[in-house]
Image (cartoon, rainbow, N blue to C red; front, side, top):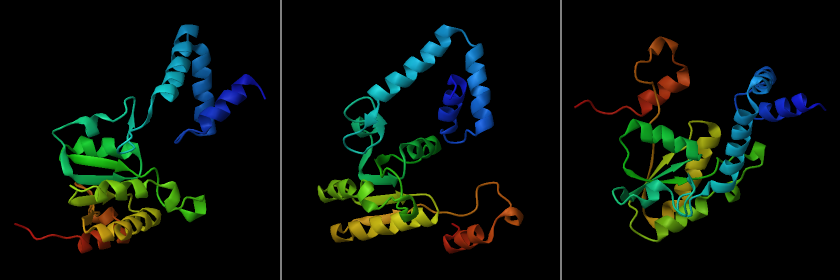
Length: 196
């Protein structure tokens, strides 16, 4: 296999990158100065060497604990459980949540060979059992696997007598009912709240 094909194959393994885009990126890199390509290669190598899971919440960090776990202004009584570290960025962009997080490392998906043992649910249980946590917000994706993971977390935390809540799902702000699917509308109706 040629060097071009090898790089394109590796780039095509990235999420959202198909074979055509991978080839375009490969040819783009070939047009760049050698120093720029070397900086990219070095950045990838440094990323892999330095970044690791936080020892508390499994967010990605270069320190022993991530910035959120080290922040004394965060509410210690709230934990938001998310599937992946990237989900934290989405929640943080909203600017409304001030608790801490727990990254599960995926979701239960038997078809993909992912069971509860491959996730960090036991570690979440230990955090709750240590005391001080009053609520765990489960923010897994609204898929069959996300729902199964949420149910598993709820059952795992039941003996600890902590409130387990689920993020609401439904129509997006600015969305039109006309274009929403039936499942989304049903969930929006189910999760309705009183107007005040």
